[in-house]
Image (cartoon, rainbow, N blue to C red):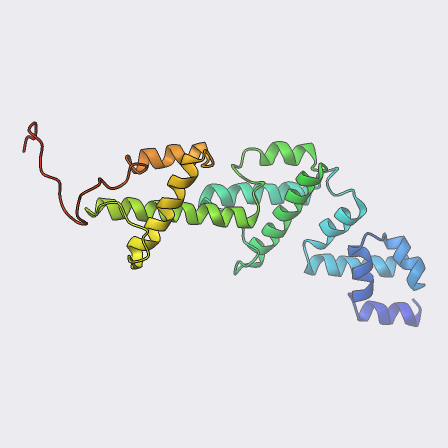
Length: 231
């Protein structure tokens, strides 16, 4: 082995070669540009792929071949994703504490990009179809989570015996926050802009939410029982 090749192997992975590979160049193309044996480039890329599990997928995406076929690693990623969603009820985050979850989040983002571009492999499309909302962006997922949290807070607020929360500027604290959220849902419902699934969820969780407070009632007051009231 010549001196250049030996030095190159000792310094693995060569970051310039890694960038070339990530950009879509093949091992032989990098070898020709760098003037070193293809075996040396291959060694560096193996080291780089071991350190960065998403590198090979990035290379395939850059060459336009990533969405056309499913590798053994891709099948394993899909299995890991399905297991996580079933066990935790959520999708992986790129800000997670563990490398495994961050890697899975990157993989999922690339599959979402493939889907939007129309290049998602049929095997991935069929397998991921079993996971509800997998194509949603992280922002959409966060918005949905916040919506569910607000709904749960309104349910808890009403269960504590409170009247419907108000959104007026003179109201502060939790009541105001919940009142603003509920007012927004009513506004969207009147304009036909509220998702039908959310509409049904609200109807089931907090019946009467669209009507809100009865006019003339004081905050916190309890209505007088009617003539048909039975203790």
